[in-house]
Length: 225
Length: 317
Image (cartoon, rainbow over all chains, first blue to last red; front, side, top):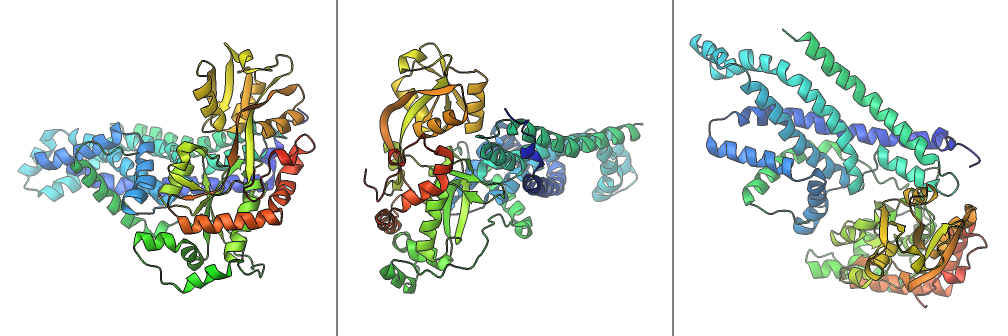
């Protein structure tokens, strides 16, 4: 091999393309995470319901995403949706929908766990003070639950960022796919390109995910009582 | 992917949540198709009679949609073509990120003759395994992704006239050559998933253990790392690779039936198929596929490959 192959990484064009791929990865992750947080809060609180039918439905939804691989959901929506209902979603939209639906149940389950972990005496005491149900949630349950669910929720965020690479399979050109395209372009004259490109992508994911997971550690330490 | 097994309840819940999510998303539609709208070459579409169909109102009914396929494409102003983005030299992205390769040269010419502008294309980047799905779910009009014609595929898509022919070969290290399929006994053979090489060895030589990879580069890396005794792929591509990589030789030069590679349209899209076949015959008359070979393949294949072993003009073998 005449060269180490690092020039495949160092070309301005390739770095720009990897940057564009990264932008797609981040956009996909951030939108999905935002939707998952918002809907997950509603879903999680709804999961604490005493209504058996509602609980059953929510549980079914949760299990559907736990049991069936995300990739199958992606294909189901992207190809199956188009074939069965003529719903022609593009790959990016299909990915956001599937990742959000998955994120919502995962986030919701974390929130449900946190809410239910608040001792019953807290709620009973608040009721004894004459607080309404909404006020009990707002002032007693949620503030305490937030501390308990934050570390797990941040962990989920890093998982969602990494899982976004599944979007490759429905034609989304995110960072991993750009990397592969550059590697394949270089396969004849620069077989070592794969090493440098994957190393670069590794570092990029690390730079994104590590601070997030550090944040979770710090919050955990700060809120310990 | 018909994984909808148990109960409508889950589907309904899932759909409700999906709709909710979709509603929140309207502002986030990406602009992923980066086809630059360059000035048209000033060419008018060759098929004058087909242009009259522009006047016809597109009808919502399925039969009308299929019959007016070229009219629909003209109305849209863009033809949606599925190509490879990581399979040089047939379909890949060059240094600047633009689509390039043998398939793309031909696809662009088809777009130019259909719409008068070779850049009036919405490229969809596909994988070997999902080309049929893209057509069946009507996400693209045409597939130009090194699509080998097989009886199984012909049941699900309609192939046009071929523009290329291939046979399989096996490349191996000169130090431990594989000169016959029998040499592969007890050895591992490297193949790329979704290729004709994989199907051929699975059906004809089930006793040979296959080592399967998703990407061409990964497969060749595995060969140079010594993880398999040989690698089976299109023989022309192997000749070119062996030429670039000293120490390797194509011990088995031609194997199995000669296969042909053709563009495909959605099953039953007779009008577009007919137009495409007409177009390929016209291109054959001006020997355009040879030009495409010179432009996209000759720089890589050099003198080791004879273009006549690969190029098909006007669908005539």
